[in-house]
Length: 519
Image 1 (cartoon, rainbow, N blue to C red):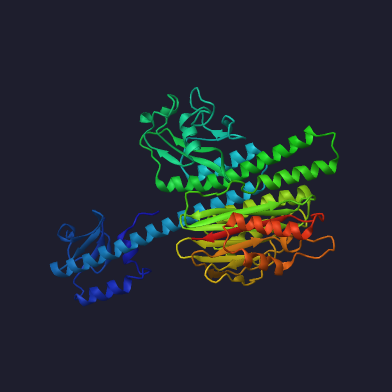
Image 2: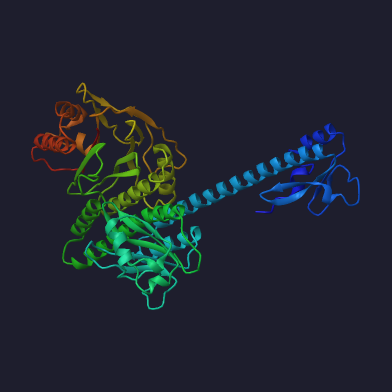
């Protein structure tokens, strides 16, 4: 950013120029404004050596110029010029900050799009580190991963190598990296020489920042950036950026593991029929990509949540997800991908990753779906699409904002009256069909004890031997008769009712349910 000069403020193009001319005239035209070099900007210099007698115009102890003339008039004009200079400096600083934030958001969005197209672990790691290095100054960086919770860490990607190290700032056996992994909390160390968790080789660093790579309920590794230059340090803003990058990278890494597992599974089962290979692999992908640990947030007492998915033999593309957008907002997602088998499972994985990585940026449900739809349409390689519902619960106020992309409207059970209400159908086309389509946000107020029940059409369209549907009416009846149950018990009862109704008839579609209750 160019240095601020008095000429900028006193030039004819400046918005302040008319006011300055008017003030000079009001002072009788007896004042003169010069820059620090003595060049006249306003008025006429009365003598050849009047700079020393002029009143300085100061900005943060720097002299921008002088005002000469009668003492009181010169002082008044000097104060006005100093005020205008201060406002100009503040405006420039704000513009620079906004530009910096825009660049951060753009690069993070760019990373999300890049990772969505990558299934190779090394490519994912290299892409994430490249974008991280563009946002945060670092001489060294690495991504350490583990395929299973009991597997040792290994290097997936790095830049910069410490003497005697594995590559990057942290060794694969680093106690510091292991502590971040175990606690699941990102950390900054700006005095590496005094941290006992760092190896001798790692203490050659001056500052290091490390964040866990959390995919769903487990940590798949860590990402670390470091600097060796003396006097460097990392801030809370840097920590937040690395955490955001880590969230997006973790999902992509988990997908690369699943892809590798799928390839390995196919190679290991060469004697099985090709169709059996496809169905089993798709089912594995589908179940590994949805949360499996309940309750998911045992430390949070403001709500309870449970979900269940029963896959059909032909394996569809149902999915669900939930996550804390921030300390006070809980996001819940349910969806259904068109098609069956491995293509549907992989498209489900892509859709779920895009929804979550976009939602955690804090966008509204409609903004989230608009961005996800744009990416899916642009990356489209098949005729697949996905219906989806995204709800955002404010844990403080109880407001439940939601948006639908062609999905079944959920139901709300009211604790006070026992009534069951269908959420307003806000329309919205499925994700991945057409670009530029808008989505509508609506909201409903949840009182303490009220719950929202989300489901896929595999519930309402489950058929018995007579080919009769379970129907929305039976869904409403089951909810109304059991609204006092907790979320786990309610889903168990609804599953029992569906199973009793179909009475052994083949299951043709996935059956997925999610319930969240506000306390």
